[in-house]
Amino acid sequence: MSAWYITQAGLLPLLLTQEHCKGEPSLVALFTFVARHPLTKKSTQLNALKPQTAEEKQQFEERQAVADARKAARNVSASAQPEGERLLQKDQLMLAAQVQREISP
Image (cartoon, rainbow, N blue to C red):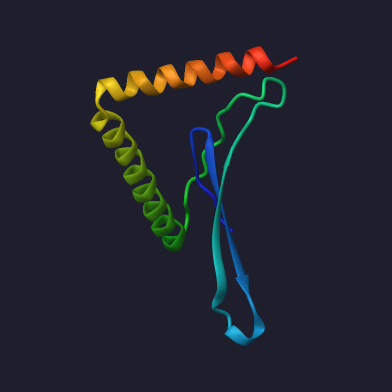
């Protein structure tokens, strides 16, 4: 297994193989996790791992492309939202937080 880390998030690939599949993986899953500082519980930096083999480099490039596409989509959706909607959403969140504070013991 290999994992590559970008700032605070990490990927952990998992391959499940079964005897009747003749060495081909039956299931491939990617778990995404965020590193937390043990005391502050805030996001913390991870040590970067450099891909070594050609397969690792290809996987890294594929995952980097996915990460870049997700980031671009977030930026587009945030900038496409009209200012009025953003302010309304902010007001709704502030109201919800105020209500939560009032009903909490």
